[in-house]
Length: 188
Image (tube, rainbow, N blue to C red; front, side):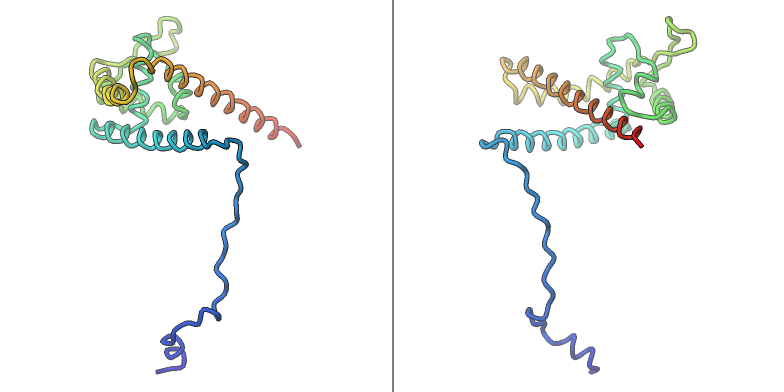
């Protein structure tokens, strides 16, 4: 046995080891002594995770990806009025090229159709086909069932209102961060 092999075969003495690295302590100010907001945040994160899983599963079962399904739902919310590709791209936060690919993909699967925009002859409106409406109905039924299972009828309007207000608050925050970032980018 060589000296290196002998050294490796001996048990290590803990006193000879360097100290283990220590993670920094991150302290979050306690603004909610009862823990209600922390519990709410945890529940919200779990809800987001489960939503992503369900959307992925339900979409892939139908040969779609989650963005395709989100677009189908967005079109379903238009109540037959149609959506311009630009509106859809802004909603989904997709580039023009990515939006064109998505439209082509869903049109090829016969879930959407392009129609002339009666208000702007240079533009088109995107509409769901019966197949696309069925996809929205089927995936939406999974969520509707879960809401019915968990939320009492008397609580649904209040929860919908809370979701609306939370969405508005997050949008205000997003806009203020976006504006602050733009202003910071303009400063020398």
